[in-house]
Length: 88
Image 1 (cartoon, helix red, strand yellow):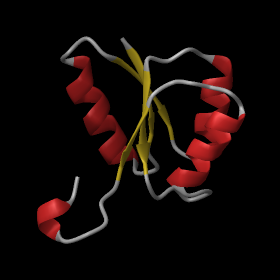
Image 2 (tube, rainbow, N blue to C red):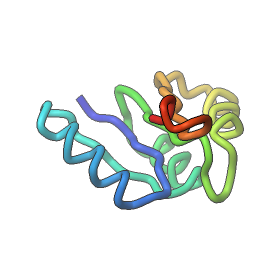
Image 3 (cartoon, one colour):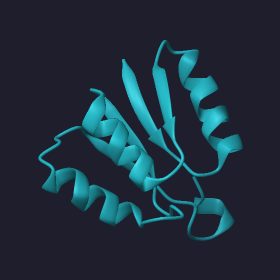
């Protein structure tokens, strides 16, 4: 399985990728929404794990652009918003 992780915090992205590699999941990392869109236009992924807040665009805008481009890859959006007990 191959996923795209769109996450601007490199430490978080590397930690998630390391955890997933232990489950035989190949993870490509994109540090911005535009970088993520470029990856999706170039490569095929089984899923996208998307940070809700990116430096160049909101995760919802990323999702709109992906669907407008007729890319049907499933997207799982994560957010750290909210109180400490609900953070992902």
